[in-house]
Length: 80
Image (cartoon, helix red, strand yellow):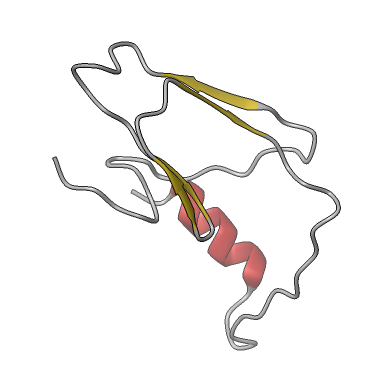
């Protein structure tokens, strides 16, 4: 199975509200080992992953001024 560090297979992306909580539970972790990666940290053989936004962390978003950011977000989520 191909592994993408950036996006799971067939995942088209989504934007979630800041307070969202996402949970993944591995159904058969012995048969199908799963790794969870965020930024530069990887944890192998996970059974469950809980994801929330860290409101303490901040960053500066850089993008091409010739390309409308809102259009890029919509294209990422809804274009096949």
